[in-house]
Image (cartoon, rainbow, N blue to C red; front, side, top):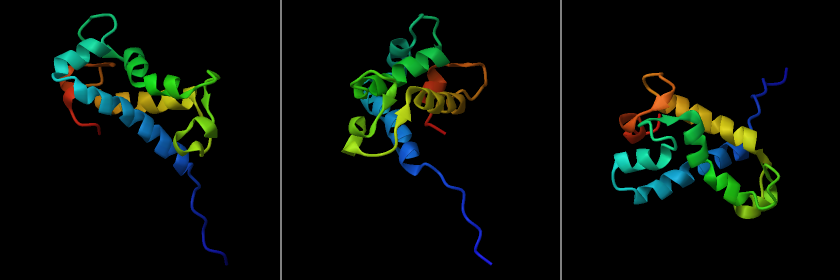
Length: 120
């Protein structure tokens, strides 16, 4: 009897999604105060960051990497020039999951405290 097979995961795509999530966080190190960070992300100025605002701010690296603007990062556009393609939809889905983890009170928006909290 053959040993049970493990479920296959797309580890390179997951690693890329994680890297894309971290790029904006590295850039945010330049922002000194959480209030400044919230203000920069808060496009409508309501004092909270919506999912759409979060995805727009955190997704800028994808747009910069997508040189042919087709909505997919191909191997040539990925760091190291290899790996499975990553679509904008997949990237936005990863950002939505991160947003959901940060939204600790579940109100559908991030306040300064939630932005300042370490990612879950």
